[in-house]
Image (cartoon, rainbow, N blue to C red; front, side, top):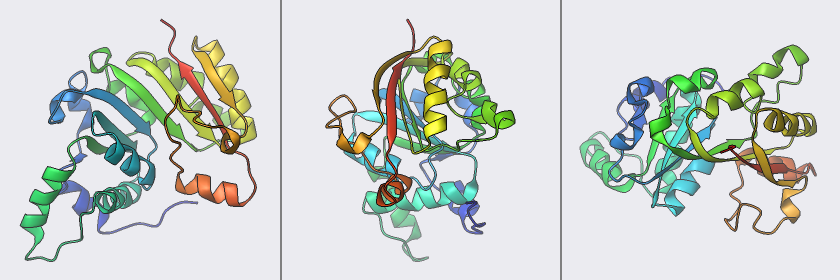
Length: 235
């Protein structure tokens, strides 16, 4: 379902210290936008940002970039990140103080607006991205639209240009998952772990806790099993 236009989103993003509006300018130098040079992980299609908010807050030793194409989504993501970090909404008088507070609190996360179909124009080999998260992306069920899938070979070949590690992928869609297994194999990735029922897997993510997205909770309540995999870029 398409999110309604949020008239406040663009203004809030433009004034946010953890939003990047010109991501192509940082290709091959993404670590320069963070306070510390650390491992760099990205989320493709971050939606409302609940996942990346919890992930970045729990792992201060990793830098994160969350990407989406829709201002309304990114505006919600910004607010959800601030809520996770305990930053309250400001009044006009408190605005400057609150911006300083945000600067201090959110050091390892950047949000940005970008078309993921052109992702190799945003990241380069020197960025050394160690992990990509793809959570409940659009399944694009019609055959003529399959190339738009974030796990399609067209996309996987782009990721291979800058990925120096692994992809964590989860979905509710059976067809997308089964097709994705083929995409990864044909693109030269090694699928390390697979599950077709994530809820019954203990520490599936290499011992890391599973962070449930908003969609994940909804699908589980409907009795839909979550499929997941970990794939590594071929050396």
